[in-house]
Length: 210
Image (cartoon, rainbow, N blue to C red; front, top):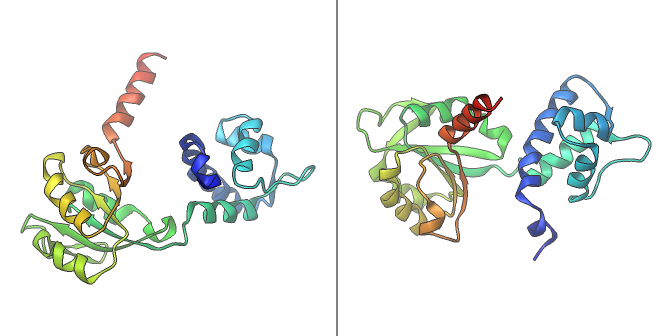
């Protein structure tokens, strides 16, 4: 087990927030920041900031704090945002269209190289400069191209057949909007599930209990 295997998901899920806030500070030409100030921005304690960053080496200097630009780059490297992982998107409906059009994949570690849909009315249209292919072309495309991950923007009932096909081509990393439990079918996959309804229900709970 590597050191990174022991880092909790709660710490990992805070890293994008660190990166986002540090990017904003960097854009404001702020050179350095203390753990206390960074904690205030992150809405955590200074101790939590130090513990989080110590998981990856620390990066701070006593009496100085953190170099904003250096810490931003360190976290960028930790997150792997320079990897340009090759990705395909399945589902060019409203959700898939929004994902393809509004996500800045190049800055987030990915390159979207193809989009697929089974709806003939969507095939041939363009999403962010990428022509939507017929889902029937998926096998051939996977055979000819190295693909690191798939973004699933299709209904839950449509996932199983597509998933089996993708998995058979060695694709084991998924950004999953479908609510289908990919890990239950293939337990060696890396899945990041996105549940917009769960997020909205969490907001509803917080409003209801305020």
